[in-house]
Figure 1 (cartoon, rainbow, N blue to C red):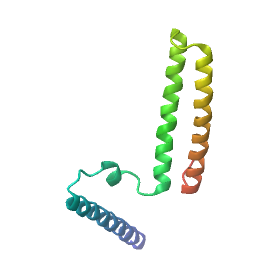
Figure 2: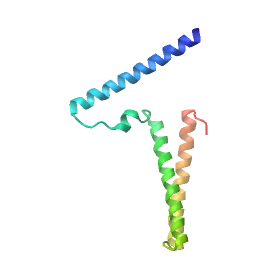
Figure 3: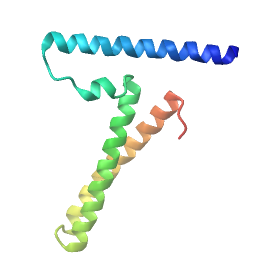
Figure 4: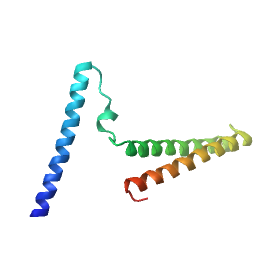
Length: 112
């Protein structure tokens, strides 16, 4: 019972913090009469998690670009020299993003 009471108190404090954040966003946008940014309201609040999410999205975009480059090579739309040049550049960037994501996961205490 005591552990459940402690977990309920912790959950209540987290909900109160979220409520304060959302109330702040509501008043901010009510004063400026702007359309709220959904990512700001529901996206990750911590910079580390934002960086991890953005790196993940960019790494997946690079994977898609490499795939479509290979499709273009197979169909003859892209010559070999251009293909290799772009794949090298993209692969280097993808490697750096994966290393960054690994560091972010370690720092955040997430499993790799």
